[in-house]
Image (tube, rainbow over all chains, first blue to last red):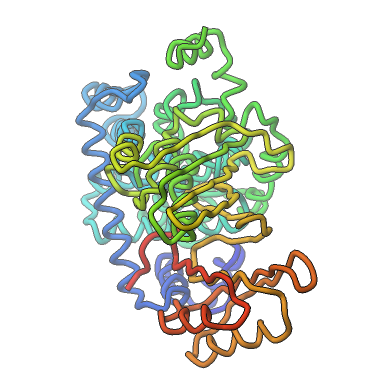
Amino acid sequence: MPQLNSFADLLAIARETALPLDAIFLAEEAAEREVPAERVFQIFLERWAVMKDSVRRGLAGGKSFSGLVGGDAKKVMDFTRDGDIAGGRLVSRCIAYSIAVLEENSRMGVIVAAPTAGAAGMVPGTLLALSEERGFDDAFAARGLVVAGGFGALVAAKAELSGAAGGCQAEQGVGAAMAAGALAFLLGAGPETSVHAAALTLQNTLGLACDPVAGLVEVPCVVRNGFTAMLALTGAQTALAGVESVIPMDEVVEAMVKIGEAMPRTLKETADGGLAMTPTGCRIRNELYQIR
Amino acid sequence: MVGPSSSHTAGACRLSHVALALLEEEPVEARFELHSAFAKTMRGHGTDRALLAGALGMEVDDANLKNALELAKARGLAYALKPKNMGPEAHPNSVAIHLRGRTRSISILGASIGGGMIEIREVDGFPVSLSAKDPCILLFYEDRPGMVMRASEIIGRRGINIASMEVLRRGKGDQAFMRIDLDHPLPHDDVAALKELPGVHRVHVLDRVAGGAPIT
């Protein structure tokens, strides 16, 4: 197979081979690892099972060890009614499931990083909500996961995916873009449309700061996974409607890297700026760490 | 993986797992120096627990990771964690790890670069570039002619491909260092043969420490 280092490479291979995105990624990973593609897909099925279980455990509740978060996913689930302002069951579940994974994460529970732990909510949250809504089985949902993982790997080849290096855009922005591409794929989009979904989503998270209160992956990270899940839905919906990203995905990723470099350290996971340094953020930190 | 942070929990665990693999014996003392973001948010991200977990040999998805401080005490592993400013050029998630076992010690400097991926930047003072994702051999030896040939001959005889390599030395005839990345793990016999080479002080094997178990 020709080289696969960028989204441009991916689209070229898709045009050439007429293969669906998941098949391209599986073949690439199988060649790299020197194992059959079926074995690679088996790993994705196993990851999908862990993801679903992390949603279930997250919804069951409990506070984080700081006591700052926990229980919000359940609130969103319990409140869900058809005709809700934010669009009913699918939307509510996307929000609730995405938050649930992060609540489980904040209790040091087992999750699947997607692409990071602080951004682990959107991919399982949105894919599971959509699968339940449309009756997709695990094997089909896991094909979406392959696409999400492949998109994440292509971004990671060019950008460092940590709040410390790139701010929250490099974590939740990328997680939402992965989810958007996978959602579009599961809803029947072609390769170009899936990549547009990811590009539209990522470009609308650019500049997002990483300013966690007391340095914990809790505030604003946990609830933010619910919000960025909405961006993923919007990205998939607009791309499926035919909206195209004017800036190609590879260039959006480059822009993200440059913005990350330009961001001050105070907004890159040091808990020295933004929400972390508000009076309330400082008070919480001081109480937690008994700083006087 | 176990939360809450892929770079501060999973990456930290993998970094000290690499140090443990290089030590090749049970550590009795572990010292960690944390830079910038690693130091600032250590407790909140469970970085302290994750570093200890790696030194105890745990994988990133071990549900016991959160109890690592208590387990270290129970296993008699003395530890210390402290912040250290490594300067503006250092990666914000950098950590220096010093492990001491009964017969030897090892020091590494590494960085957690996001999504649980890591980079080792120094091993016992030698500047290296190591992701620990693929099978890799580290050779410490006395600088002399023919060492690269002898080492690569042992590997080549087995039909294993060298993906990349790096050769460094402190000075002419002084201690030298070789990093050999391989496409497949090297069998034990060949590792033993490398150790037998004249002038070789130490040989370390890193077999996909970061990146989880190999897919078989």
